[in-house]
Length: 228
Image (cartoon, rainbow, N blue to C red):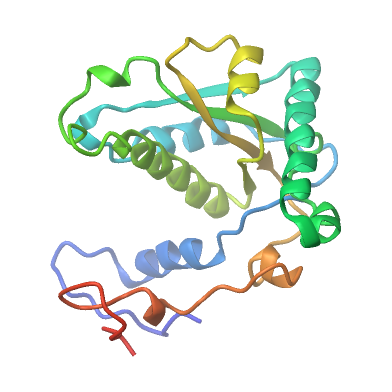
């Protein structure tokens, strides 16, 4: 639960109501899998969400993200088939938890109002600023763009689900991507029946989130918590 009042620590801070709205979007964002049948996303809203994604920070201002909107039902079904094939292979790899995994709903590709593929661009290798020793910063930058869209979607009352269960080579071939481009996310977007109060994987008892104190230390990698 958010505190009743957030004390401003800077003259540049948003108003109390504005800051509460930002923190609310962060706290209530969920990885959605269930969507309202026949739902739609207004064109102006979709444009705002894409603009929010494009406003994300990127290392060296490389802007490595590419967005492909899937509007053809045949292509949508082909994307779903690629995901479903990997879902079954993932289940096999999970061994004893195979049946439990197959019972989970892990995507809403056929039900969501909008389907977007997010990819790493084909020209990112020319960017050296911030990537010489950490080339994975292109993926980090794309992740920031996805998070921007996720939070903006929650503020618009829309659900978004990030599907990563797919064979990147098959999806790239389906969508005719250049050889050095790489799909990283299938995003399901649209109206949802509700927003769960907890992560779905906790509700389904697949796993449980750990507290912040498990992840923050001071002055080095240690078991001593920096926050209590």
